Each structure stands twice: as structure tokens, then as C-alpha cells.
Length: 212
Picture (cartoon, helix red, strand yellow):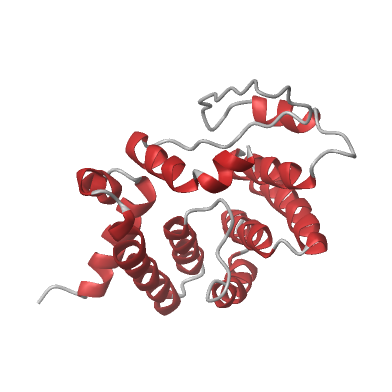
């Protein structure tokens, strides 16, 4: 698992981009080396809850945090999502996992805005945006993180801050991520990846300003 998540992170990213899928790892706390299995799961897969239920007090807390956050991102209930994000954030803060804490904060702000607490969500997002200058959210695509920020600011009517998030996200996609994508997959990366497509379309439309 360590090899796949660290050494092969870029390869996994390209596969997910080409196939337009989310591929959260489903862990077992007691693997029998060298038996590995990779399953493609839909967002509503109940196995996320099942995998979380198999973890005991002595199992890897990092695994627990990632599963909790995947559940938070897949549930339709924003209040449940916030509870899961709070759990992940508490654990990440205790263990000084800044990237996980940042991801939890972004997901929580998104859920908070969906629950109607837009002012609180926007306030939290301003702090998270400052953190993104020095920390990247772990296991959350950076382009999607900026898209989340833009949506949260929009929900609160903060047009200038939303535009800033869109501009910074589009710049990251085009100047940082795109050069790392092989030529054969660049069109798919820009047009078929849902986060990129939404982020870039909104950024280009709003940065262009009103038509003459």
C-alpha cells in the first residue's frame, strides 16, 4: 500500500484522470502479504462503512482518517459529513498531519456551505486558502481543492474571493499539473476530468468579464 500510494501516486493520478473515476483505497488492517487486490468502487459503495467497521483501536490511524474522509465526501447529509470531517481533523491535528487536516477542513467547509452555514464556511475557507500557500491537501487533487474554495465563496456571495480561487486553481492546473501529463492524455485531462472542466470553464468565463 505504501508503494502504491507514494511511489506510484502519479501513475494512479493519470489512471483516474483517463477513466474519470475516484479510486479510494480500501484497506484491511491485517493483510496477508503478498495478496493484493484493487477494486473499483462507486461513490455510494457501502463497503467504505464496512471497511471502517473492521478497524480496531490499534489499527493504523491514517487509514481511519482517509476512510472517514471518503465517507464524508460521499454522504448526501452535510451534517453527517461535518461530523466525519471533525473526527478526521481532530486525529490529523493530534498527529500533526497537516495535509490530512487541510483536506478535512476543505471538505468540512464544503459540507457547511451545503448545510446553509455559508458565512461560517467562508470564514473557515479564508484560513484554509492561506494554508494552501504552504501545504497541499493530502489525497485531494489540488485543482478540486480550489474548485471547492470557489464554490464555498460563491455560496456566501463573496464574488471577488471566488474569482481569486478560480484564477489560482486554473493557474495551477495549466502551469503545474498540465506539463506533467503526457501529450496523448492532455485533452482528456482538461476536458474530461470533472473538476478541471468545471474549474477552467468557470475561470475562463468570469475572468473574461462581461461581453462587449
